[in-house]
Length: 77
Length: 143
Image (spheres, rainbow over the protein chains, first blue to last red):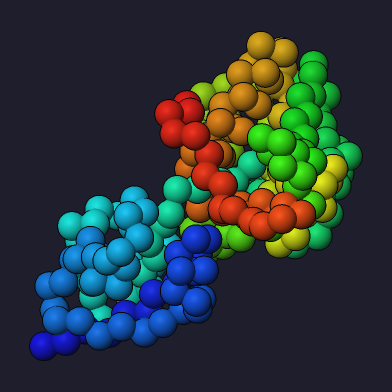
């Protein structure tokens, strides 16, 4: 059983991916941390995780219909 | 008052935020205005570009304002962050805090800018005359 989520990219990750959003389909049970490692295996950029606009642990699994964001180190202010 | 929280793509109006927190019960207003500097480690900065995950950033800013109002009773908060292109010398963030007494006002203002820099999902790109770089805030700031 697969689940489909929408990933929004911000900051350096948006530049790295060359796009603002993408849809991904992964096996049920895939964690956010595993999804990040799969999509961005080579950057060495630490991230925090958000699902549906809430900060969550990277150990949470992606659910069907989720909006997922990998949060690079922030720079507001 | 409910805190005023704004995430906007237009120039910030510090005076309007100051007016929004004014109250006869408050003896002071602390106005923090963060502006873009024209240099970074010797390189000339032409402009900054901010982007935000707005669906998360607005609730986070509201949480910070609520937290300040709860930690420093009587404090009234308005905060605004600009996104998109911010030319050198213009404000990227404005925090207005009115407080019954100045100690609480200064403390709440300092808390809000430190916590915003640590927690709000906002990213900043510095554009130099010879390149660009995403700039993260240093870790370990309070908040």
